[in-house]
Length: 75
Image (cartoon, rainbow, N blue to C red; front, side):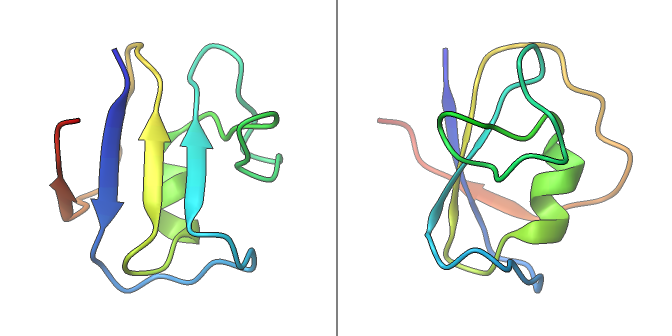
């Protein structure tokens, strides 16, 4: 199962794309957040994305260490 989350908080991302990827099993928070090189943690994604960006989260067990405001839609 993959969750698609759109972050609506105030954060910034150096990448101009609007789609980012997180995979707890195969990601690395030093990566670009792309489909090929996903981030590892939702926390890292929350710090990097801009309002309106979409974060694609692969299934897995995630530890979230901060309060983040998210909106979501099921496809």
